[in-house]
Image (cartoon, rainbow, N blue to C red; front, side, top):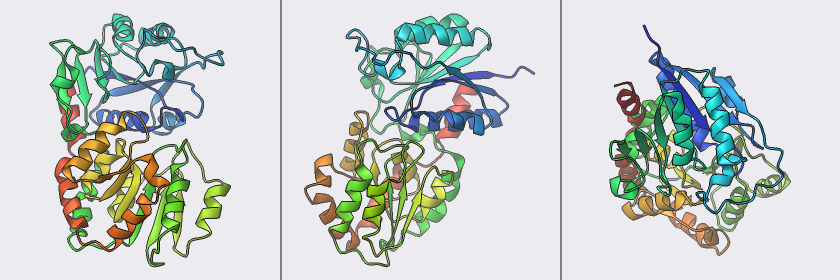
Length: 365
């Protein structure tokens, strides 16, 4: 029996974050359970999470870190091309050199810094190409494209993908780990009668703009009952520092801090309100019906925040709201509100946690 071989080209860093790698690992684990072989090609960027690949039991081919202290912008390349850490053609040739030894059936690309020029080069190995994207800002030479964002559609990629490219659009195809589906029923059941007893702060794998500290200051500005617990996830690209410790010491509430977590579904299922980034973790919250206040902390998150706010599944704020008192006032209102159950119901309709199985079924078909 021939074993299908999937090679993932994805990176992580403080600038890129860890969400791209996380969703690729989710897909890889699902494919592995179906009998496929999965290998990762990742560059050795500063503050990377490449060790996660090995800890999850996958082979890692690590591309070398560039010796250049500064990579000048290439005006002819897409906006995020500098995230590669090297020129795109160097990355393409290094990736192709690795692919030529791997006999891949599929190359799965999840990287804002890669586009059709790179894809034309690596396709020489003979594999099909799947692209995971949510920007729609550059051309792709691929066989399958997944954009799991709410509101994504063919029109957004008009002229950017081949006419024969198969497309998967929307949170119905969100790559969530199986435990989110497992916790869904219990999480939704506890939100029938609503009150806020547990607040979760989570800005993804890293927090380069210090959002966590700013949220803590906003919460200190209002009167939160000491019975309300607060959890903070710092992720693998950030860490609790002296400023965080000083702010935390001023609360009378019980506060729990986490680094990397492997039980996010469990933590979310008992959270009554999340304050965090409007990234791919938005679909995890929707699956479990968790009301949230979200901030677009990266360019690609603006559309997510806009769409979720528009349909009533979350409340989107701007960075200015962290310092102008708006966040504190909003949280205070939500602590006394009886309308959060409605937000929970709307969120739960957006993502049901079956996306991983759907995507794997389509790829293997």
